[in-house]
Amino acid sequence: MGAMLENGSFEVAWSDERSHRCLKIEENGMVVPVEEDSVYTPPGWLVWFKHKANKLTTPEGRAASGTNPPRMRVGNNGYVLFAVGQAHDSGLLQEVATEPGKKIRFSAWAHAWSNHHDPENSNLFPHPDDAGWSEGAGYEPFFALAGGMLEDSSMGNMTFWVGIDPTGGHSPFSNNVVWGQGAHIYNAYAQVPPVETIAQADSVTVFTRAHARYPFKHNDAYWDEAELETVDDLAKATSSRGQPRIQYERFYVLLPPGASAEWASAVVDATWADRRYTIGGSADDAGIGDLDSRIVFLVNPEKWGGPDVMSQFFSENYPGVRLRSLKAKTPSELVALLTEK
Image 1 (cartoon, one colour):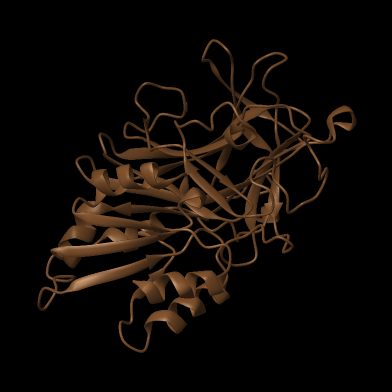
Image 2: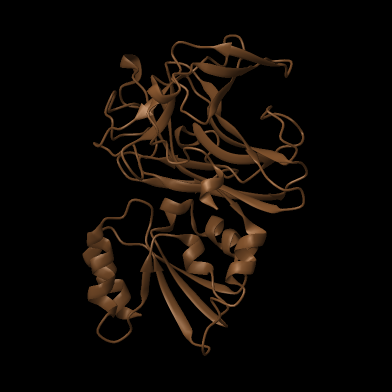
């Protein structure tokens, strides 16, 4: 499953391959192999970037191992592509052997540090060079699906996607590439909306993509925990699993990206004695299940892009979920809200 990818968790040391190889995508769409000394291409992968004179620059790339805030999701390393004071459109690709006709699913986790320094507009950019602060999002973890009202704001600066070329091509801008939905993600890792398609050749190519629209001083795109799965095999392996023994009403408290253990403890304090609600941070986990009654308490919906965005997500992916929004500034406020339910 996940082992279909080489170095999906970016733990393999760069010294194992020592590559600066990249693919440069020209304005006319031509794909040009290049060597970029500023890019330490992770083993198993190939870095790509779009070049557009005075608009999109060549990024720098290296392993990411910072811990304040964490720049990896699992293990010791993530991977970062970044530019200083310039916009970029870049990502990673990997060609993977597969079987034509197989349904495959690609996923990855990501987040951005999007921070600017402008002495003439310090009121607009109040925390220059602060590694925990992203413009628009502040210090808090932030996730919102792309395509809403954020696109022309600071929070719309960095957008993440994952994609698959089912024919095995190497251009991320080919019409053959199937892309998942984009997402704006800041300050803490969240899963980029996955993508599924049917393999059409003996190999497929998976892509990650991050587009920084504005020439902020810091445009950093972090990646980790990429995974490619054969959906057909997963379905066969689990066809007899996951069915409820009996029908019951499930309540799921969906905590926002980056919520600490204190928030999870608040749910336990409020519900464990008599209701024992399910607690988690995955929208997919909240929606899945062959149950007639699935109720999701969406905590601080603005962290997910707003209740309308999440309502659309569940309607499209997990029909039948009933969504209830809860807004709490502190874990103690969440206790009070859940106690009232």
